[in-house]
Amino acid sequence: MSNAKDEMMKDEGIDTQARISIPGDVVKTALARLVQTGQLDADGEGLVWWFYCYSRESNWRLADAADAIGKDKTTVHRLFNGAYGASYDNLLEAILRYKKIALERGKRRNIGFIETSTFTKVSAICRSALYDSMPAFIYGSSQIGKTACLTEFARRNNHGQTKYIRMPAAPTFPFFTKMVAESCFISTRLNADATRRRIVDAIDDRNLLIVDEFHQCLITASDLTARKIVEYLREIYDRTGCGVCVCGTKVIQDEFQHGRQKLVFDQFRRRGMLELVLPDAPPKSDIVKIAAAFDLPAPDAGNLDLIKTMLMESGLGKYFKFLQYAHGIATGRKERLTWDHFSAAYDGVKKLSSKEVA
Image (tube, one colour):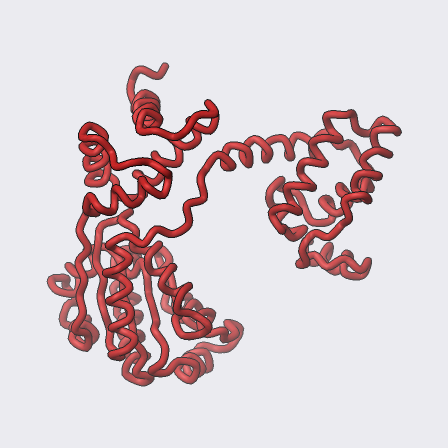
């Protein structure tokens, strides 16, 4: 149905994949006309205008705006042009729901990527795998920043050089080969033999192939699928000489060294020399560096103990989330962020998680 609507909009000269470019004065005039005819009240007019401005400022396509409010692209186009032709009640409710989410998310601080000690280590391993044309293995607990570091490395070393693949849960071998093909900009409509042949043609010794969340194929797929994926990576490496970086939890290390298929996996493991086991929690220097990104000083002893416990139990991701939550509290109070806000965020979440909540 959506494809048919896309074709219809193309026939009308509307590019659904282009950025929203409806002029502001056109939208303003259309909204004023809807108010005059009683189709919108002043609040409704303001809500649609907010959504239009938010969409333009976010550099959205019609598809992005449609996804935000759970409607189709045609509806959004007609909404901004004042040509919806039906009751606006459901649309306004959808916009209001999204506005509440957007405003809350707007309290988050955009701190960009922080170069932690983990990034330094991961980058060194990835560069060695690329320059020395060998497999490398990175193991670490969940939520310590592995994926963020790998995607940032890929971003900085791209334009075809680095190919990043995130292993899905419960992968099949055909689906994995399609993911490799997509990373090489190869059509996934080809048959399996053609896809594999063209993947090898698209990769050479100047490329690095990163496979993140690799433990998924060892714990959520069949033994046969796991063997196929591992052996396929070995084949790609042997035939192209590319660098390969396999990353995931310590399940990989355990399965490669002690699992029931270790003799099969050993052929691939022995081709590499580099194995990085990341610590379960970052050093104090990283804690301080991340806090500084939020314009916070180094935490005092009480908060430092709290953070260390948090990192050991849940990883770096939780520390970031609490800092963002604290920033939201400070923003809501129109105050400068302090460690008191961090403590308030922690206490608030602890209360919600306890039996004190009815």
